[in-house]
Length: 427
Image (cartoon, rainbow, N blue to C red; front, side):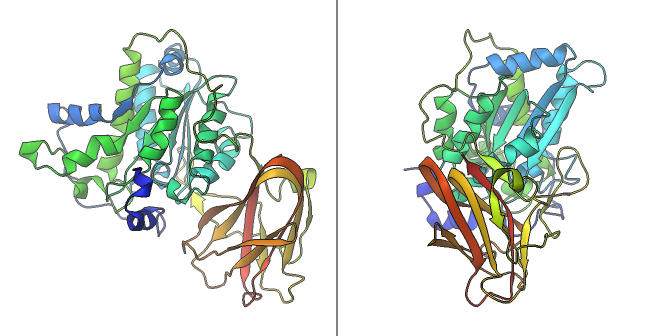
């Protein structure tokens, strides 16, 4: 039985953070002996699969020559750095990037570039839409190494692994052939979606690192039996690591880098050109928002003529400031009639995801969604009840056709706000 089929109540509780990323660090940061045999064994247990090493060895050698190497991370709040203080310098992403730079790059390491694209409370359903913008920078950057971390966020992925595999395949298929690493973080209740997602890694023979494998069994032991770190030391809250936890996560990636560096090169590199294990329907998904809509689709804006500026923020890359997510949005702001409350999109596509804003504010209300004049579902901005980006699957069809999508305030919510952050579409 898969992890995501067990402990259903726990899965719902742990599917996404219920509050913004942590700002108060745990006081219990008792250091462990990082040089001990027990610690080394903990780190070694994290290596779920060495995977094909050709691409990662190539990136390491490229770094040694002084060529520019882009090391990128995409995931949820843990990749964002939640629980780490300061968030931009103590996250596992920054720490492992720093080690890679210091270990493999000559001189001052200026040839190693960090791309950190973690966003709290979001699954790979949203990550695949963000990838072009937040990692590839709309074609300006090509990662040489990509770490994907969605194992504790993807309970909310309606595609049940299709978007995750689509993201893996999209990255692997890039012309520069980056190394793709799967990282499986874990929650305090020992839960993640590794059993669903790791088979994708084995399918494509990818390096995989598991915090669940490294930590969970030893959590149950005392020091004499092999305990290295307690849950109180590792977790800042029920979701996120402390600074010490982020250090351990970084060390597991460092271990993978070292193992790969010292291993004999594989004769052939892995290929993405095979039948998908779950699905790859969203490999070519693209973001549609207020910035580019006029070139792609036709809209009747109705009351959604405003732009929401109170958005989820994330410290991207090595920045110490927050970047607003999906600023090119459409917001309905307390208007009157049903007709004016309707936003209509005419778009030729076969697959479509809506991105809307969740909010704890009672100023926001529920919207109804119709496709081709047929009601399909509601979008409730209080489902999670804190300000963040929510992806919702509207349809997934095999053939491209002209579609009409209507979003309007539900009955009883005509005087409320609703923000359409954007859409992810496959044409």
